[in-house]
Length: 180
Ligand SMILES: C[S@@+](CC[C@H](N)C(=O)[O-])C[C@H]1O[C@@H](n2cnc3c(N)ncnc32)[C@H](O)[C@@H]1O
Image (cartoon, rainbow, N blue to C red; front, side):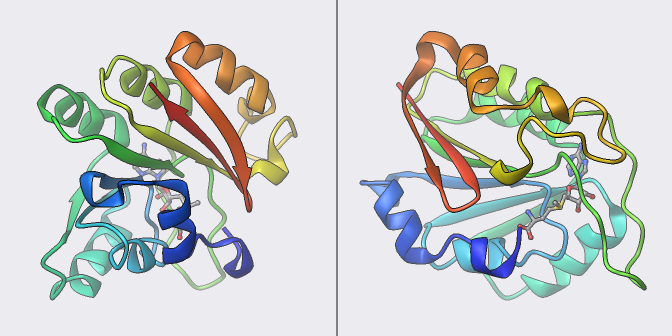
């Protein structure tokens, strides 16, 4: 996510009418830059990161933020535990799908393509969650190192979520789907 594409606190409040009732879950946090904005908008935020290096950097970064928790694991493993337990609706930012790190930064873990598995778990949740899939500008395109990304479009996401979809909208570089 580029700096100009980042969601702001005002964006979150515009997207989510009753934001104080929503938990924020970000799958794939890297350095935690988006989480560092979300923590001012949501009452409680959870950041999930597979890479041990990045997860521990974020644990240190958010050490003093009592409304932020970081979990080092795969987003799938996290959602399998979180979804059956949660009773509050959640804003899910799904961003664990692809990442190029800067020179000199630690490599990230190679992972399976997570998006459809994440969406399947969220689809089974019976709450009015909001799903945000990042990187609209790359939807339907070939991405180096991400062979399945070409299948990701607004249409395939909406078709996959089926009758759970209430409405959807592009928001900066993020595709937002409100579930019912
Ligand atoms: C595009 S970056 C995230 C950027 C971040 N959301 C932001 O806006 O600053 C993708 C991150 O997802 C992580 N990741 C990849 N596969 C994952 C998985 N299965 N579960 C959790 N995190 C994963 C990578 O290690 C990387 O840090």
